[in-house]
Structures are given as C-alpha cells and as structure tokens.
Amino acid sequence: MSENFANLGLSTAVTNAVVDAGYTIPTDIQQKAIPHILEKRDVVGIAQTGTGKTASFVLPMLTLLEKGRARARMPRTLILEPTRELAAQVHENFEKYGKNHKLTVALLIGGVSFEEQNKKLDRGADVLIATPGRLIDHFERGRLLMTGVDIFVIDEADRMLDMGFIPDIERISSLLPKRRQTLFFSATMPDEVARLTHKFLNNPVQLESARQNSTADTITQSVLKVGSKPFEKRAALRDQLDQAKDLKNAIIFCNRKRDIATLERSLVKHGYDAGALHGDMDQKSRMDTLAKFKANKLKLLVASDVAARGLDIPDVSHVYNFDVPTHAEDYVHRIGRTGRAGRDGTSITLVTKADNKYLDAIEKLIQKKLDWAQSDKAASAAPVEAKSPARDTSERKKPEQKRPERTKRPEQPQKTEAQKPQNTTNVQKLPASENKQSNTRHQNNRAQKNKQDAVPFGQSDQVPAFLLRPVRQAS
Image 1 (tube, rainbow, N blue to C red):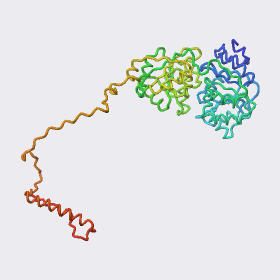
Image 2 (cartoon, rainbow, N blue to C red; image 1 turned 180 degrees about the vertical axis):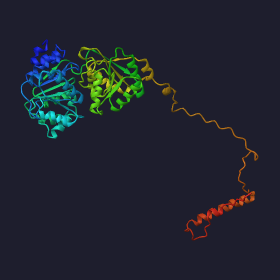
Image 3 (cartoon, rainbow, N blue to C red; image 1 turned 180 degrees about the horizontal axis):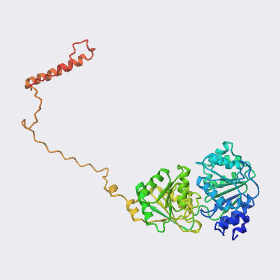
Image 4 (cartoon, one colour; image 1 turned 60 degrees about the vertical axis):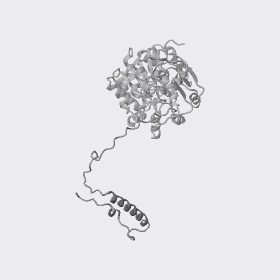
C-alpha cells in the first residue's frame, strides 16, 4: 500500500500540484485506481462519496497527457458527466491539479454560448468535459471529431447508464475509436447497470474501496416521522433546523422542482437564509447560487438531485431529506454531501406514512436500520399513526343502527280570518255558488281545449286561454 502520491507513479509536475493543494496521503480508491490507470487498463471504480473519486482519474490523466499534443476539433480525452455542476467541478480539478501543465481543457455544457465553446474546440482540446446532450449537439453541427480520443471516462456511471442516458452513451461510444481506455467511477453500481458496463469496457479491473451502496460511518443518520401535509412537513423541518446543534450549513433535498420553490420561499419568509438549486434554473443562476453556498454566503440550499451527485463541498454539516428519495441509491448520494473526508456529518430524513416502502428499500440497500428521531413539535403537529378524535371509528354510527325518528312539529293553531294577512290588491271575491260554477267552467274549458288540440290552430273555434281567466275588478 502506497503511503504518498509520489509512490503511485505520478509525474513530478502532478505530485507538486497535489502537495500545493494541501494533500499528502491518497485515499483508498486513489491508491488502488491510479496505478491501473497509468498502466492503460480499463477500470471500474466503486467508492463512497467524498473519497476522492474525481482525483482518482484526473491525476493519472494529467500524467498521461504530458506526452502528445491536441489537434483542432479532435480532443485527446473525453469525460462525460450527468450534470452541468459536476462537469464544472471536474473542470476546476483540472485547473487546480494541472497548473504546472499547459493543457487546453474545454467544457461543453448547456446554458452557455456555443461560440465560446467552439473557440476552445478550434484551438484543440487535450481534455473535453461535457454533458451528453451538448456533446451530441456539437457533433451534429460538425464542430467536433472524436476519432482521436484515447481515454474515455464516464463519471457517476450508475446515473449515466440509467435508462434515460443509455441511448446517448451508446451513440457517443460508437463515435469513439475501439482502441481506447475506458474508466467508470461511481458510488453505487446496481446489478442491472453493472451488466451494461461489459458493452463499453474491455477486461476491466473492478476496484472497491468499500462495500457497494454503503454510507460513511462519520454520518449520523436518523429519520423523523411527520404528517403528510406540506405545511406539516415544513413546520417539522423548521423545528429540526432550530434544534440542530453545530449547524454550519445544510442541503435540503426535495423530489420535485415545484416543491423546491415553495419550500425556499417558506424558509425565507420565516427568516432563514435559503436559496434554491434545480435543473429548470438558468446556468448563471445555478452557478451563482452554488458559489454562494460554497463560500458560506448562503446557509441553506434547497435542491433537487442535481446537487446529490459528486458535488465537492467539503464542509457541509447537515443534510435534510425533505422528501424520501424514490430510488434508494439516491439516498446514498444525497447524504454523501456531508461527512466528507473524515469529517462528522448529520442527515435527517422526513418520513410520512406513505414513504414506508421507500424507507424499507433504503435500509435494505445500505444494510442498516436507521434510528428514529424525536421531535415534540413534529409529533404534536402531525401524528402519523395516532387517530384524530374527529376521525375515531368508535364514535361513528354503525350502519345497522336506525336513525332516530324525527320529532313532529307541534301543530300550529288555525288562524282566524282576522289574523290572516290581507292581500293589498283588492280582488272581488265570488260567492260560493259562483265559485262552483267557475270551477265547472274551467273543467269544461280544459276538456274543450284537449279536444281542440288535435285541430290545427286557427282552424277551429279554439279560445285563447287568457280570455278564459276571471276578470279582476278594480276597487
């Protein structure tokens, strides 16, 4: 086992840059991966988040790139990243560790002008870092040839090889030369995804610095039972933020983008220093928000899973899962934003009754039972299992019980003629005998009308109905 970077076979220029960055002892995955990469072997590297996977391929690539020169529009190496933030972060690593080299690094991501990216490609890129969509756009525009790629890196392989990325990866792979070196790095590698690696790698060396899908021991993990209504969850989250000890900063993960905006507005309204980060934001806003959070100018970052993969923010003290991730692997990546490089971290997941199946999948994946946190405010605000008195089934009326009979209204005494309200319109009242004659006349008229209905109007002695009405006499 190597004790320092100088014994791994790296060049002097790279070793000096690593020392200047403040690192002296390589991590376990770096010690295992770097020698194989320098030997031009295909590698599958699996390690926990925060263990230096990025440097595991950046450092040997810098050493291998010291020989040779890039040609216009023909990059020498290609690194694919699932998100713009990860691509920008890898670009920063090349600038930090490659300061003693004169290499051209091109970053192809969405949300940035094509013109500036084309200038870098025309000069010739030794290293090309890209997201799949933007890379294909440049190729289809005829601005890029990939027949000169010697090293092909797929970072966060489990996400890149997810169902939505497979067609893009297969197409890009077909554009590369067959004689190349391919590197896969990820924190998780499900069995169904691992089978796909055989399509892209040739006799790879599989390296594991820890058990797959495991979480760092430096992270204190717990779950909190909350109500299912959004305002109950927001109240429980604020309660946890107020109770947290040594809260320096925190990332709060949501499953849906609309919930991110709602939660961020709610936190700001209640006086918390919060910002949002998700895929629908423009690139400038995303980078500005991330830069503020890294510089400790923003305390709370409400984010989607775009911030769960590989972002290197070394000193995040807390991670909150406002929503339980529907994919268990995402839980490993989310909480991996804290407890990095041997630091202590805390993760708390808010769980509703409907999230139990997702929680079971997470515990099965990480092979660990999570502790339940206690919160008096959250329990009183949203008891998941306790029955509400208004909904207690024991108080409901049983179906077989008969409804009580309605009490009859007391009979009202008959009003006398003097008590009856008088009609303001003076209508001449007919005597009883005339009233009977009037009723008989109306019955005869109706019979006559029914008889005449069969005859077309205007061809009989039919009398209009308004002429049959009794005449009111003015007073």
